[in-house]
Image (cartoon, rainbow, N blue to C red; front, top):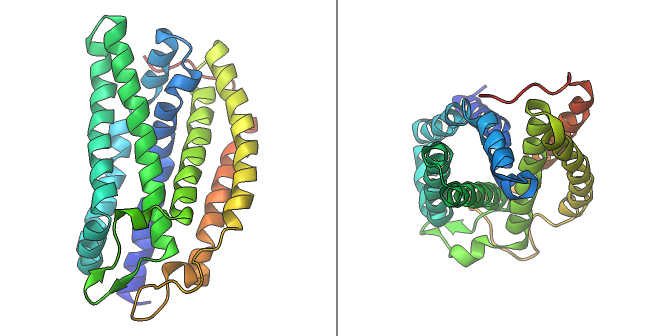
Length: 264
C-alpha cells in the first residue's frame, strides 16, 4: 500500500474521531435553547461537557496538522479555497470556548444568558460550516491550474447546504443522547424524548439527502483527472457510514445504564 493511501486513511480517521468526540459537545451547545428550560438546566448541560470539550478539540488540531504534513499542496489549496468558512469556524471555536469557560465567572442572569447564547450560536455555526465544507469536498470543487474557479456563493450549493443541515441533525442527536446519559430527572427525560424525535426526523432527512445528485450535469470538477471526489465509489459510501454511526448511537441508548449524575 502506498504512503499516500495510508496517510489518506489516517487523515479520514482523525476527522472521524474528531466528529465522534466533539460531536456531542457541539450538540449540547446547539440544544442549549431547546432543552435548557432555565439557568440551572443550562448550567448542568454545560457542566457535562466541561471536563472534556477542550480535550476533544485536540483531534481537530491533529487532523489539521496531518493535512499539512502529509498533503501540503492539498492543505494550501483547501485553506485558500475554503478560507471564509474555515475562518468563521475558527472564530466560532474561540467564542464557544470562551462562553463555556466564562459563563460561570459571573453571577448575574444576564451575564450567563449572553454566554449561553454565544455558545449556542457558535456551536450551530461550527456544525453547519463543517457540513458545508465537507459537503463541497464530496460534491467536487471546480479547480484548474489557476486554482479554485468559484466564490463563496459557489460553496452554498444545494448539496453543501444539505450536508450542513445533516451535520446539525447528527450532532443534535449525539448531544441529546449524551445529555440523556449524563443527566437525570426532567432534563434527562426531555433529552431522551428529543433524541427519539430527532432520530425519526434524521431518518426522513437522510432519505432526501441520499436522493440528491452529488454533482449536477454539465458542471466542472477537479482536473486532472476530470472528476469530483464524489465520483469515487468508496467515497459514496461515506454518508452511509455516517448513517450507520448515528443509528448505532440511537440503538445503544437502549443499552445504557440509568442516567448518571451530572459532572460537578
